[in-house]
Image 1 (cartoon, rainbow, N blue to C red):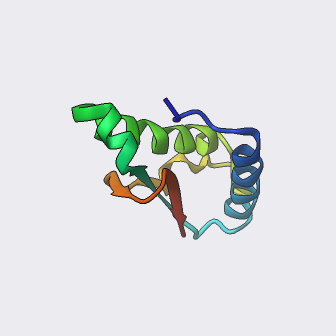
Image 2 (spheres, rainbow, N blue to C red; image 1 turned 90 degrees about the vertical axis):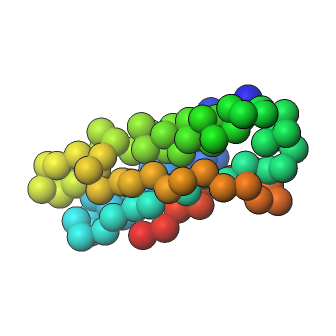
Amino acid sequence: MVTELTDKQKEYLDTVGKMMSKKTDLELQVCPVVSEAEAKQWGDAWTTNAHNRSAAVKAYLANVKDKTDKVLSSRISLCEPQKGDKPLVILGV
């Protein structure tokens, strides 16, 4: 199951976390997308697995503190899972 973060993804999230630490007015939306093949393989559990994918992103960033010493978790929201052409997590500020 592909819900674990890769080193490359963590490196990107480190950059996002640094940006959010400096700009305390930014909020992040984490939107999981599963491929049709994943949805078929996961059956009725596809939304749960997609949610786990986005929750991994939030968990990774949750304890990062901004310049006012507040954790980022309250500024990160999760979107409803969607189906798409390929598996990914869309980040939006």
